[in-house]
Image (cartoon, rainbow, N blue to C red; front, side, top):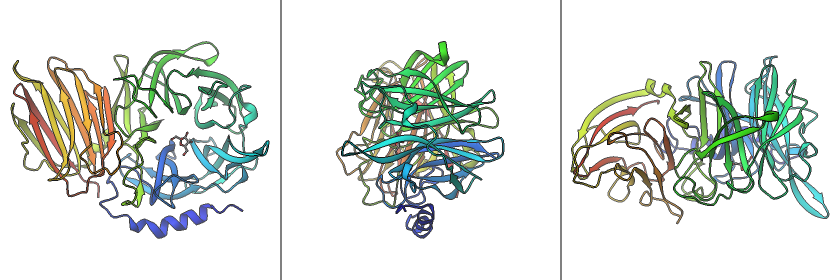
Length: 492
Ligand code: FRU
């Protein structure tokens, strides 16, 4: 019998979640009830509500044997906490219930598809193998099926890795079920495998739809594959990327590949870009809403940057705001779900004058807001810079800098209160149009999400600034003016 059970985890959540203060818990971003979370899992519509599961280790603020935590929502903003869905309690998933996805079955049940990680002894060595497993439930309670795993390590192309085979993303199309999962070729590089099924229970391998060939990182984790605005879209989260600035940073990245369907359901790439240029963004997953919007959510953290300030926290890790996706001018654009506007509270509108240094405005303050700044070049002498200082106190500040002349956006959290010497700045290219750049900033306690030019580029990052750092200041060079529209958000 495993030491981890759903019963034990549910009891633990219930007994410990009151340790998390309202300051520590963001207002409208998903976190675990207690402890650590990483990837979003099972982001899907079930019985007309949006369900989100996530990689979860309730027992500490560090990664550990993976459970699936669970929340649901009617509008992506207010989430109802549900008890732990599954725990690593079987031989085939005793090392962890890794990432996966969910779908509503025709018989009204909800199906979870996840990676079961188990330890086996081979040639006198312990190794962890990864296989795909199912659980069915009613939206709260789930039972693993008796013939797990349903996609075994025998069902991968020969020579591929049995140790790295994970993160199934399921969908239904023309009466059939499909899923994509990440795997590794013999050379260690990522392969995206496609499987199909008539009933979602018996699966067969179809095709390797794309191969990383060690060009964009190595293993590709957490694939998602869908159609959007006439394009096939493949989202992947590569490990071990080498930097190729300014488009790709080193480490764990997130890529969006746009293309079309080729022979044998293969994916034919047309472009490849970073999904989000911030410091904390990984493993995005999407769903299709009732009204036909493709909405993406991601873990607002990254394996390379998730090592700071654990000791002062009871929850660690959160999701991004769900984002509506659209392809504009050959680029994946992301904007916060429109439902956020239902929670606007006080509104303030100001003009920031050219040459202002550290100016602040009445009401424009706090750590829970949605602010749009329309920046415009208004003269020739000056260096074209706009800088926003967020979560500012005497000791701390986080800077967002836009350079209209160089067409760059820079996020800098090096003075935000982090306690580890990890990467703290990120720069990305943005476009000015007739000297104009529009920036939207969504802040919720420790999370900052920036959307440039209606979501052409986004930057998501965590800051660990104490909540008393709540001032906002604006600095503009001589040739820059800005219109500021600030909405406080109130969900509690
Ligand atoms: C991505 C990932 C997945 C895996 C999960 C384990 O962040 O490494 O590939 O399923 O996290 O928690």
